[in-house]
Length: 364
Image (tube, rainbow, N blue to C red; front, side, top):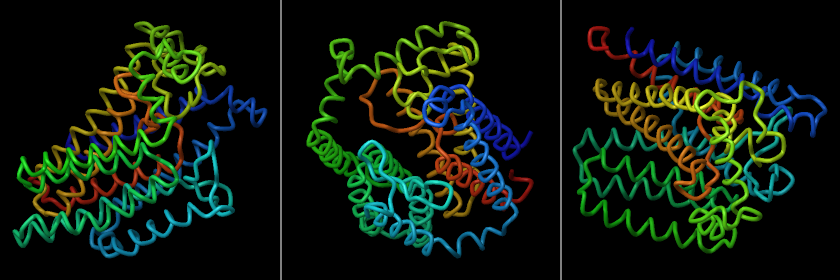
């Protein structure tokens, strides 16, 4: 099969798996909140159909139509980030303002910025690569975008999304051919700034200390990660059986979102968890393979952006659940419940599919 057909197939498998698993991971929460075990599953189905409708519309559109609206989409997403901070308009959950209430659904603005910033940076990268200009001009330009975006997302607060976007941008700079020593210097400075920002909030400092020994804090800040590890351990090789997990029954907070991989592994075991990760990593691999083949600088840049941000987000989530890194609140693409994330992830992959399709058939 050609790469884009494999991309379509495996993306569909990931999306279907995540949507169907919501019926299990969020059943208990649905009963508690809405007296309906399938409440979250029904919402996930709606987002599934919206996401795939958008996917098939995008792959039929001429690439030029998409590229025409990069600037308006980017500035709209910036405005929405600002609007998210306004009480009464935004939706506050667990002390964070990350969602805007629409008529029937809520929309997470930081997810949209992953798409629009990727498009904007790819446009800038194509310009500088075509001119073979000094990369310092590119760094200055993306800094103008990145700094206000980082501040706005941190104010929500959504430190996990901010760290994910900033790290993706710095990995992207390597593709642009930045001098490695210079890259290492500015990366170190930004890393120190991120660490200081994390330490300024007491709850983030507690997460870092809990990461070192969660069992010493298992009644307080280490509780969530300990329960997640118990879930993975209880799953063993083949799992407890679909729907039979115990952690989702009120023991593990955020069992259907950030920590869904623990519930998935508990019910489907190491075999199920490893299979999902293999398919996910294969999708990322296919995107990097496509990026290597395409010749248009913009197309190549955006496919690389998508592969990097999805792959990095997947690694961060699994490492968080396994207690390799502190809890940072980053969902696992496709498996974690989240309608905005589902739609944006499918949109980015659809754009990659569309751009790759412009390559002559013999080169695909």
